Image (cartoon, rainbow, N blue to C red):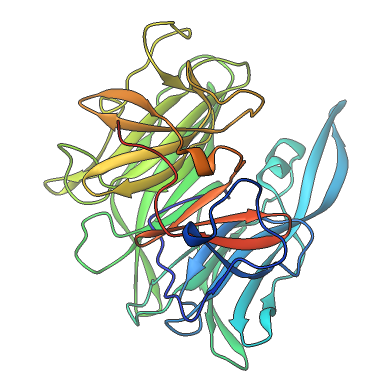
Length: 361
């Protein structure tokens, strides 16, 4: 899952000014040291209230690669697990970890991947982890000393991604799945929207087919965000080419009683241009006020020496690269947004930035 960076909230306690290890060239009044990360390898950090409205961090911990050979083709499948950290007086400590999981690349090796996302699916003000494997969905609920899980039957082709989002912003979250569906022309990718009512999973609306572009392209979710001229918080879909080309981005939103998929909000052309800022690959999404800001690979505009290190704002159907502030220029990301604050991981330590690291103009 990369899921990625949605608008996430971390309720901060008594963060201390930076002491000991600190990113170079940062001003201490702008950076707070939250604590050391007890895990060597971290990706896809999510922060919020899983146990309480306090300071928990959920992330994927990469553990290695397995080589699978199918029909003469060798596929590298990542192995990882989910880890939930809780911030205590002693620092960040492991509260829960999952079993070993297979990355979505397992599909190419004819294996069933482990797909996960998170969200307040039962409207109790706490986040749950939602895990999809084969024909079942597991919901993990957490408390300070233990966790519980609920398993629901699920009928799908092969799920390759999922995201939990309040698309209508009505306080009730939808589970959106991206599925690979065999058909006479090959393998089509479809989207379905679900709602969990009690202990039942019910599909909302019709199944949506993603466009058949006739080329090698990989679809995935980027999360949800608010967009100009679109109601609620649409789910954003990435169509990533296997070669270095501008990627395609789509918004899934509710129009009347139907869910609609459109690429209109996002400018696109076949190749990179010197005159137009375009992204390629995964983007981290942030809503800053009424503007969508993304962190990722933008051409032109990528920071020198860093493969995916530019912020850009989407306004009036165009991307505009945002310049970094002087004190943040040596940060390499990744960045995560927590209300009005920002988080980064540097040298195995979590740091809180008191303001956004970029200029608007």
